[in-house]
Amino acid sequence: MAPIPTPSAQPDDAPDEYVGLAADAAERRARGHGWTTVRSLPPGAIITMEFRGGRINFEVDGAVVTRCWVG
Image 1: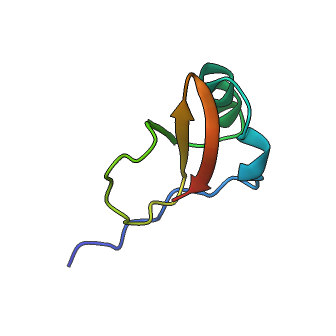
Image 2 (image 1 turned 180 degrees about the vertical axis):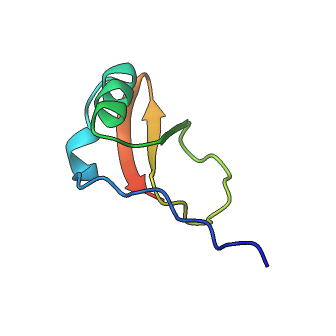
Image 3 (image 1 turned 90 degrees about the vertical axis):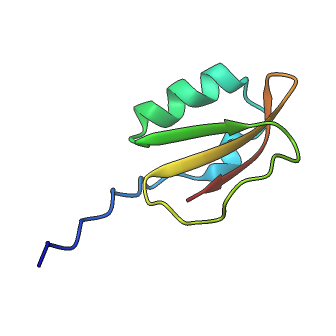
């Protein structure tokens, strides 16, 4: 039987602090804080809702982060 994979570590970070930042600055900051996956999405994008440890999601409108959540 294959071993159960170890999920990515979740950085200790406050998602609300990314709101209002320029998208490129927010991505650099997130990667610097240890997020393994950074996903930028347009407002109203249709996405799957599976939780992935180590992923941070940005809703970006006009090159500015308007919403942020983990997973």
